[in-house]
Image 1: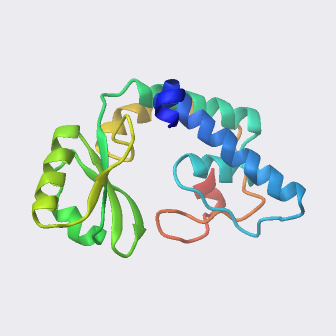
Image 2 (image 1 turned 60 degrees about the vertical axis):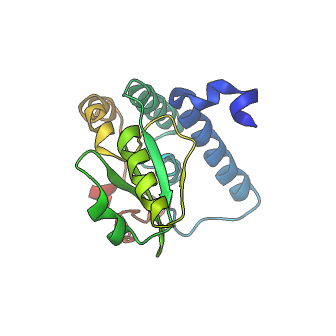
Image 3 (image 1 turned 180 degrees about the vertical axis):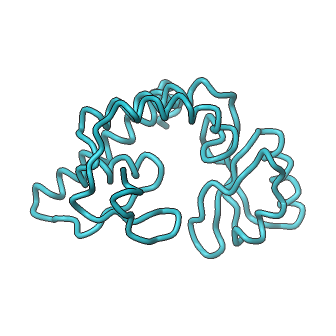
Length: 185
C-alpha cells in the first residue's frame, strides 16, 4: 500500500501537491490526444486543477497556491473523515458545531468531517443502527470548521496571484451552476 511504501504521502503538505500534479497531468494528456473539455469541474484540489486549465491562474501560481494551502492545512490539528451511506439531509442534524458535511457523493452517500472523537462517536452510533460507514484515510478533517483558521493566511497568498476570467466554463461544486467570472476570480 502507498501508506507503507511512501509514508510521506500521508502528510497533507505532500499529498495535495501530488494530487494536483496527477490531475493536471491527466488533463494535459487528454488534451494532447485532442480531447478538449467543454466544461471543467473538480472537488477540492481538483478545483485548483480546473481553474488552472481554465486559465484562472498560471501553472506556477497554481503550484504555489496548492503548496501554500497544503502547508497551512498540515499545521492544523488532526481530525477525521467518515463516509456515510445516508442522504446528507439525514446526517447533517446528527453533527455538532465542530463537524460538517464535507462532500455529497450521491443521493445516499456523503462524507462528514470533524474532530476524531466526534467522528468516531458518530460512527459508533451509526453502526449501532446498522448504517454503513467507513473512516477515510485522511490526516485531517478537511472541508470542516477545523480548517477555518487557515482562511486568513491563505487569502493573503491568493491576493498575490493574478486572477483571470476562465476561458473554459467551470462548474461550481457548491450548486452545479457555471461559475461567473467574479466567482472564479
